[in-house]
Image 1 (tube, rainbow, N blue to C red):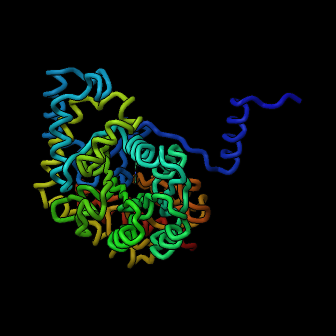
Image 2 (image 1 turned 90 degrees about the vertical axis):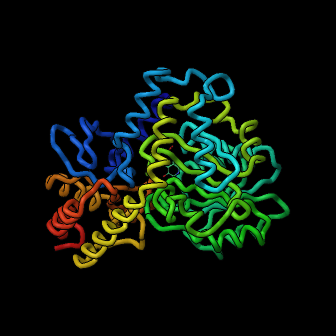
Image 3 (image 1 turned 180 degrees about the vertical axis):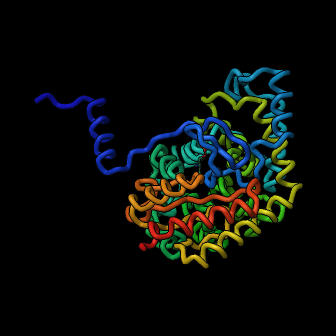
Length: 396
Ligand code: PMP
C-alpha cells in the first residue's frame, strides 16, 4: 500500500481528533452587540470574549478608526521598516511605553508574532541558550522558544522552586525566564515578585506575557507587572496584546530603548510582516486613553467577578482560584465540558468548552469570561442557567 503523503497524514490526524470527539470548528458570529452574539440565527448572551473592559464597540474607538480609514485607507501597505510605519503607530507606541513605564514600545501584528519575535531575537543567535517556562504558558511562548532553537525547560505551574531548579540545572548558558502574567485558561496571576527575585539571583532575563493583565490589573490598568510593583529592571521584557482588554488587535513589546532597538533589527516576525492598519492603531490609542481614565470599568468588572464567584460557590460549582475576569469551571472530561456548553447554549448562553490539547487531559473546562460590558442581571442569568445544568456538571 502506498504511504500517505503529507495531506493524507494530516487527514489521518484530523480523523483521529474527530474520533476522539475533539474536533475544533469556528462558528460564524452573525452579529455582535456588546456581549450579545447572534449565532445560527439565535441571539445568545456570550461569556467567552476577551473584551474585558467592554471597549471593542466603544464609539470613540470606532470614530478614531473611521477618521483614519477615511483619511488614509485601510491597509498600512508595507512593513514598518519599509513605509508601513505611520504617525498613528508612532503615537500608539509612545502611549504604550508611557502607560507601562518603559522607555519604548514596539508594535507587532499579533501577540503570537511578538512572542516568536522576542525569543528569536534574544535567544536565536546564542549558543546553548535556555528558556525556562511555566508549563501553562501560552502556546506562542512555547513556539517562540522552539523557533529560536533554544533549549526549553518547563516547570510545574507557578512553581517558583521548580523554576529555580530548572535555572540551576543549566551550565553557564544565558537564560530567559518567561511566564504569562495572567494565565489564559486558568485566570490566575503568576508569582511575579518571586520570579523576578529568582531571575535576579540567577542572572536570567524575565519576560512577562501580559495579554490578559493589561487594562485589567493595577489601579491604572497597566497590568500584572505594574500591579506587582515591578519596573523595567525586574521585568526587562514586557509583552501584551491589543486584542483583549483594549478591544482591537495586535500586540507590543515594551522595555528599554536598547531592547526595542535590538528587536527592530532582529525580530523577524516584526521586520518581515505588514504593519497593522493605521486606523487600528488610532483605535487602540483611543482605547489606551479610555482604559487609563475610566476606572469605573475595572471597578464594575471587579463587582461582576465577585458576584459570579459568590453565586457559583453557593451552587457548589468547581470554581478555580482566579480573581481575574477569566473564571473557568473545571469539569474534567471533554465530554462533560462539551455537554455543559451545549446545555447552556440551549438556554441562550454562549460559553466555550476548552478541551485538550489546549488544556491538559482530564482538565477540560468551561472558560467563562466576564466583561465590563456585562450587567449584574447578565451574571445572574448565567448563574441561573448554571444551576439548571448543574446535574451535567457535578452529577445528579
Ligand atoms: N499570549 C497569550 C497569553 C494569549 O492568550 C494570546 C491570545 N490568545 C496570545 C499571546 C496571542 O495573542 P494574539 O491573539 O494577538 O496573537
